[in-house]
Image (cartoon, rainbow, N blue to C red; front, side):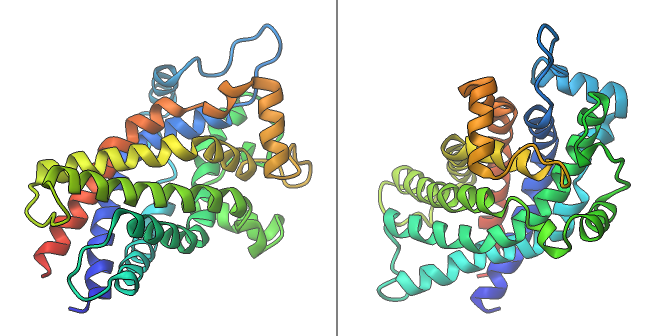
Length: 298
């Protein structure tokens, strides 16, 4: 197998592992991010992550935690093919000669390049996912946004957006904050991943690391992604679930300013707990699955 095919295969398996482990956490994160600000004197729809879990299980059962997984599951092959293949090709370009390990700075550059590429796949996929995850919270709160429409599934969301929200352009709503999340986030994640691997290995040769070390490196790398870009993700989520005909926000900066004005800095970190709780096991699973598969392919 060529390197591109190996990265495609290993990335697909890694992405599937990440999705299965992390999606319930992601559902709670989006519900907390997208719930409307409560009226003065009224409590929020969800008082916190555990309350969101309890209400979701009570209203929708365990399946509610996996709502919206169809869209990312259907595109996980393409998404991770782009992420790991672009990263792999950039590694080949930056490597001085075959087999020479890259520096941490070079891995940061590779991650940033991969982040640019995956943004164009992540944006429509996450718009569909966020609409499905958020609609129950917004509908029960009497929201007037488009998400209050009851979508039957991922394809129903796509059809609605294409028909009623500007065609293909509507599926790329939130591309700017998506890119602002993916580029620095992936730069940090791959840089931290390589830095921790080299630290644990005692040098640039990390080929002898065991699975436990890969789990630690992958988990901490994933945490670094969200620690760096979480407010951007909040802005992306509110933009993507915002109404089309009567939008609350005119753009990313307007959303940032309004969240900050109405809820303070705390509003930019809604759902941060579930995101961080998800990032460690989900990315540990992703990187471990990727490395084991890639190694087995030679």
